[in-house]
Length: 286
Image (cartoon, rainbow, N blue to C red; front, side):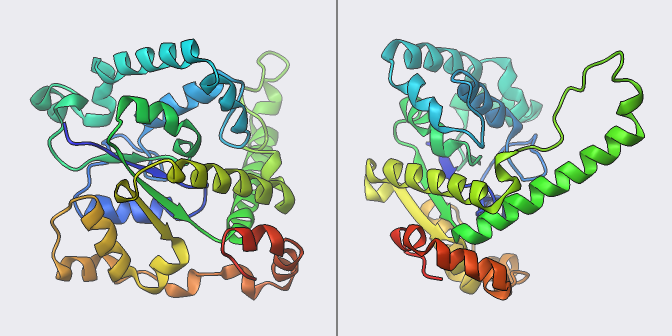
């Protein structure tokens, strides 16, 4: 089996952009994916791991309680290994590849998966894939926070409208299965920014414990400014065979103006200045 490439990094950090580019360059990242190009198979396994400690993507730190008990992580590892080796892996591989390769263990092409939750579940994945390569994509924390807030408010608007239009009439008989937002924490800049800090610290701790040749650090803003250079670097890291012309074609649509979007908003610049110490710690300056 070819060792996987595991993507880590905070939500809204550019993992989807890089994941799609590498998929187009030849990296297999699954057949059944969500709108963020994330494998639903591995996404569900990460959700299950976080759920063991009452955690989820926006409150992830309590997963440390799972990893603090050897018997718990050993049980979780056995469970996930069984799923990876079962027919349920067809959700990731697709029917044809599943039956041709005999499951994930038969993969003989560069492959991997992206899910920001990997940032916190990585210790488990490294037990299963000890030689995995790790790509960390980071982005300025204020832009990440703003994007999270925008998404959370959009979800709230849609959920509220749907409730008034449809679900309000059935709630006397059926409970509402989901909330009005995907993250109350990320409804404010402060809450979303604090989540970015947690992901950033966790990613740094993970990378610091691994050999440098198995890790690749990329900054979203750098990719936007020099996309051909950084896609070439990422493709080589993933052991993909891709020509310079193909790299140019794949990166021709990338807009460098998306970098540091917060600088165009006075209120976000003010927020960045108020949090300069936290940003400076991770090499960002407002």
